[in-house]
Length: 201
Image 1 (cartoon, rainbow, N blue to C red):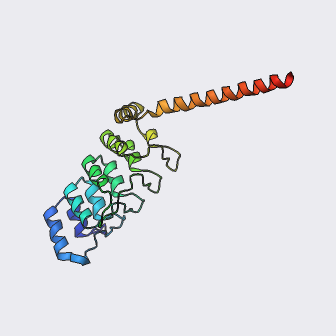
Image 2: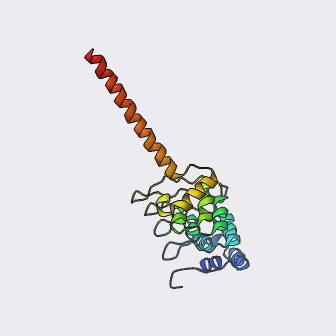
Image 3: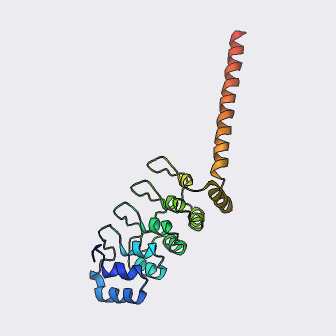
């Protein structure tokens, strides 16, 4: 079509599993499972963005690249997280590496430095945020503007989620860091004062 999408893209996007299997059978070894449209999207990007988990699993089993980047560097995980597709996110995170598919890179950054966690945060998808954090997504990664995922989420929502996951909230961590810095400065001052007193004697 005009977007450069193949039948594989369209079938995956609309979750037509039986048609997808027909394409696999007809295409055989000549079928490019990672074919791209004009925006660099693969069929797996399409399926992930629309939450078509059955088609996603079928594509992955056939060797679809779970870390494939589109024109702006986003992977299927970015697309699923941006659209709040929690089942799709879980499906992608279940790929740990096999003969046909490499393991998922949960912290992969796009051209703006955004991770899937950043995308979920920006769009307010709390369920996806929770899933990603529970699976070990790095919340300290900064984008090109120097912002972490927490910067794009309402503080009350972020705090609630990280506490549910069992992590220390960003606010509390910052307080802890400031307290540590103050203690360090205070300790240095006292040491300096002690040395000065000793020298004076």
